[in-house]
Length: 322
Image (tube, rainbow, N blue to C red):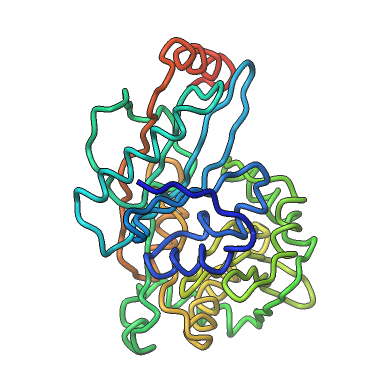
């Protein structure tokens, strides 16, 4: 196996492989720059690239672990044996790193089975396990037909009431103020505001952040960040003012995101997570727009030091309750 560490000179080549093989924006070169402490590993054989993985180093007291969100990304043109060989090479390389207790993977495709290392189902999940994917290459009439009649009604209602949607290339502070209100209602975790500001400083041919704002009588009542990478658009966090919920601004905004994506030629729209247990209301809202439901494989921890791994789990349970 040929193992290479990728630097900034191969940014375009890195992203091209991801886009060709349906890689997530979380594996993009740009997202890695936003995260800071990452390594980018490329594994090949006989001059043929088999796998890419952007690995985030996470520090906890006394030691560290590595995390690969929606990865690694395998070439779609490799055999099952090549997939297994390259995956083993990846884990063996990470295992050699000093003070690395375990590797956490949240893959987007099923990983090859191997008994080289001790692996366990991860006790917690960071990225969504389920999501809805909408094919933007369908005719608009077909997309409209798949939208629930109540959602269609809400879109028309928002239009009649005078809600307008604007798209910005720059960050707007109103987003975070609305997000804070929404977090209090729905009890979810978000990044600090500085993270979202940094997101809008990225501007490349492959990666783009946009702000969608819903406005009513000169007041912003809903705001959403949408990220595009390659031919895919993904909605991240959305914040809204509950006082104006009767205007159905989020419904109109979401439809405008879909229409905007189709206009610019994107092929896929990812609603970024559904969870009927934690967020039943939001999940049903997203389902109102149609789309295919996707469930990703379970996250796994590949454990290199079992004693320290058990200490990590105990510390986390004390701090977070899980």
